Length: 587
Image 1 (cartoon, rainbow, N blue to C red):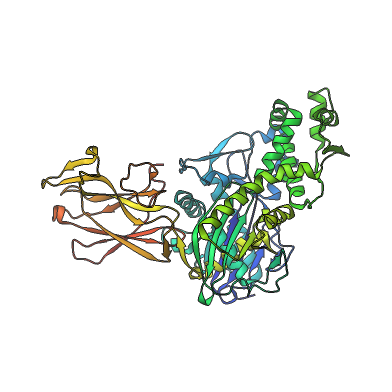
Image 2: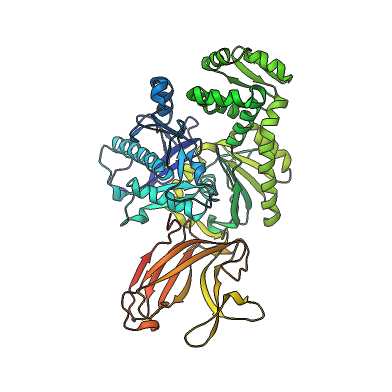
């Protein structure tokens, strides 16, 4: 392995159900090591089918101190803690979904532990990042026999492309709390969009298994001009990206990434609904409350394993623990088999401690989720037009049922999936960390702009927004000054500029409010579909020139995060103040 003095990239992929991390050195960037977070002595090099992620399960002590993560966290909670002790310990699962599509997301947003206690999701993310950071550096130092310095590492965090800017900022702040970076070296953290990362991995590897005819290499897929959809099918969310391969092998977006909460956990919900129909809501709620760890074992371990391996036309078996049968004996006059017989469904059988679900009932669990995914893919195709391939990655993409369903739904496309579905994102994000320029252009998810004033138009503007300034000019307030339009192609690093002046002669700062809109041509910041997303406080400490002072705001779009800087031009100086948009200000 390369010497530790070399620069390296370490990527952390915190998933809804499973998490992992990977790394490579700068001079050997395509030799990606998918490291084992559960055993510091185990390592799998890219291409190994045995490389595994671990469950996204965090265990904190009653004093909210870190105890363990992954399998060890679940085992300690379920097997080593007494029932009365479990009530004080904090076990968190599937907390990533707290960051999806929440208009009220803030630094105070909380996630509920298994015992019902609430805890800030930012701190849960921080503990998770500290765990992966500690294990990653320990493994690298062990392999290299030398100490790796923090300045040698570029950290990468994977994020769904459908996340809003506030969720991205919360991840960055959690990374700072975890000491992955500091305020002085924030450039050492890269946020990588999950479908883009998977695309880079697919481009770099001979990975495909085709639905119709086998392809021995990816050269056919990644030729110049090829257009494709890439669906990252995870445990919680589905991300769909539309890409085109350019000359030289770089990639650009054809449409802004989109998706929704239709990952594998939606199938879990359907299974829970089925159990509720069989056993009754009251019994299920009581069992979840009194036998929390046993319930978690049924859903997160037993059903999860069967869900991933069930074959087309096959049965799905879910083993129920002893605690479940003891609970039924103590709280109900009937056995599980008796209740199944009363349910009158020939597709459900109880066999030697397991619920056997026949294929027609299996389809009822899966297909509602498949239909949501398919419907969204068709919406994207309608916007994009003709594409050549549909590439599937992510843990949910390992499902043969999903592969068959989408192959039948999209016969006009070559439906393919990665041989390393579960690791495609984390491995590809390492490549992105080495060279973000492999993605040359993205599409804006919203129309972005700032609040400004303009001359009042009596034909268009409402009287409620009319005001007259000190110079006697009639102006319209709350005007939306557009910077980029929804779905506009934005080359990486594109800059937009606007000049601002202080509101009063003695003002020592200018406050710029940043807005987004779902429409392409918003006129006002208070109209329907427009929302405030951030504020910028721009310092203007010297007041001698009064209102004649100007500050230029330069915003950079097209990267995974929106960046901004300011220049005080009224003094004639070229000093630049680097600023950050605060999408969580006041929260």
